[in-house]
Amino acid sequence: PGQPTVNPRLVKEAVTLFENGYEVHVIYNFWVRWADEFDEELFQKYPKIHWYRVGGHPVFEPIRYLWTRIRRKAYLLLFKIFKRSFFLTEKYAIRAYPELLKKTYRIKADLYIAHNLGALPVAVMVAKKYNAKVGFDAEDYHRGETNSNSKFYIEKITQYLEDKYFTQVNYCTVASPQIGEAYQQLYPQLKPITIHNVFHKKLVTCSPTLSNENQPLRLLWFSQTVGKFRGIEDVILALGLLKGLNCQLTLLGHCSEVVRKYLLLLAEQNKLNHEQVKFLAPIVLKSLIDLANSFDIGLCLERNDSKNKDFCLSNKLFMYILAGNAIIATDTTAQTTFMQGYPEIGRVYQVGNTEELASHIKFFYENRDALNRCKQKAFDFGKLELNWEVEQKNFMKLVELQLCKHRK
Image (cartoon, rainbow, N blue to C red; front, side, top):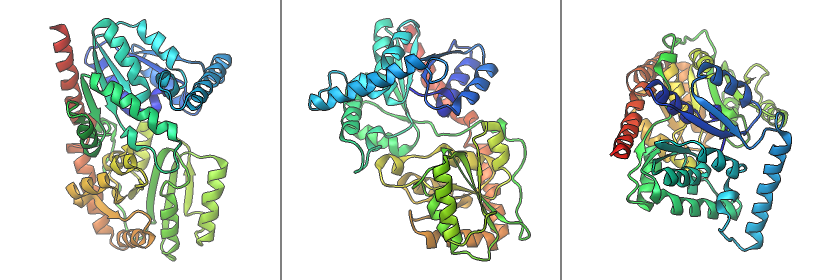
């Protein structure tokens, strides 16, 4: 239900299957304008993978796009009127569900892989028609994405779709062991396999950039979107406690002017100078890893206000590792467990504890040898095991096992 480049896991799987000799079709919906440019670069790089956008586009197919938005709002209204009725649940879930289903029915395949819960009903229904296999990639713990502020129907729709379709998949991959354990408890027959959000080590072009006392301490945070209440406030407040230390924070991602002004005002209120907080627009993955290589610390600031956030291991964590950054991470369940397995690469602090975060930053600022050891250890783990070259073997075993069963 989203665009390819906003889902790196989908892209890695599609490219891996193609490079292993399979014919690959990717069907997707428009999601966000800034991703169009990166999608186009991807399509040009892999023209023999079949890419299909359905459901319209606000610029190229505005009428169709507008119609799908109106239709989904109407479905949601029906959901509320009929007191949580589930007779149109699949259509509530994503904007262009009918178009996604129609296009997928036209493509006979041996295996259908759904990325994101909204695409799962499509994969299951079409696979039944062609007697094919179904895989599902749970990058998130979907029923745990909601919190006390979420709209009631989101949680109900999610649970309904999981209960109805998870029992019909042939395999399930997850982005962290914690997500897998949570789903395993709900669906014992599922047996999820963890596929981490790692990247190709071939994208790395140089060793970690060593830091010394004559340089500023360079901190990096990135995501598709720079937003409020994503942990960035923690860092700005922590830097405000470290007056006199030459630290720089770079935020990379799509950032609205409202959010930019909000963060700059917060920085000003905490006596940070104008050079300490910088903003960069999204860039392609290869350039992102090259850029991250020049930084000292990668920030993993996941919150724990929902089970999904508490269970997730984001792609930023593995990108920092591959680029040779020391890690400072919040103490979510998944990140704490991960960092306990790799204690040499960085430190963990309690969510919202800016004093503890400040102490970690100060330690690395004053102990550049320790910082460089963390950077080198992270880089070594990235090259040795935390990369897609290793992880894709598990993915391909799953796929080939299902295709072998299908042929029989």
